Image (cartoon, rainbow, N blue to C red; front, side, top):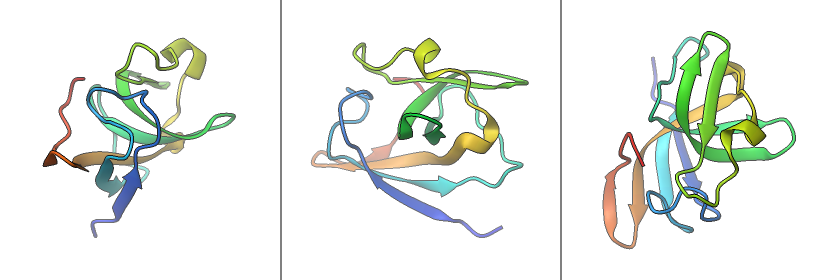
Length: 107
């Protein structure tokens, strides 16, 4: 399977202090059969909020609960359950003024 690279710039502070406004994220687009797990940082396509970068906080057979790492982020209950087809990418690395590093599993 080819590695389908995804690059995004962080916009906002909902993932602070893990990710800061302006950080560059590097990850991969996920095929439909690839699961994500709690702790992963993903890009989702929300039906009303658009594209968001959030952390998976819980998974179930029905989908995923996601939230930002910052206390000011939308709560998982307000975002709602995310289905697998709404998960667009999983991020692995961040590039910031402090250098490049792996994104930690937990905020």
